[in-house]
Length: 159
Image (tube, rainbow, N blue to C red):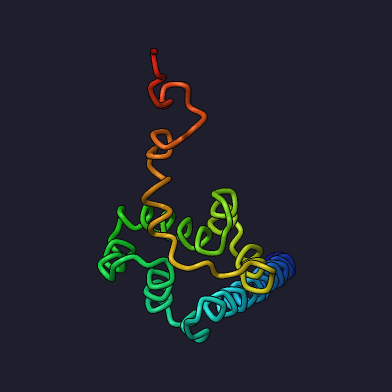
């Protein structure tokens, strides 16, 4: 007699759990579709096939082509521990290829379902591979070419 009394509570709990799980599943699928659509459109803006956004490893390869890095980067983006750094770097180069700043890279990393559609469907234009810009400015080389730096002024004529 006592078993039937508790079985009502367990079936109610399982129903609530199933509803929560189903809701999370639907929201995840919708956010994934939004991210893929934004990535698809971004690839098309860069002159690459949009369908590459749905192929798991090929989409990384296409992003590497968009930013103008060598193909070996695909290996670095797949290897454990190293991939974290290289994937963030790759997202930074993608955002720079479209004329965006580092803040946009943070958005692509943490909120891709918002920032990929902004990049794909927004007014951002593909400016070309950003490898040259990243090599010239990203690692502190900018300080040596800054004309406003008081220590980087041409020598004054003493006469």
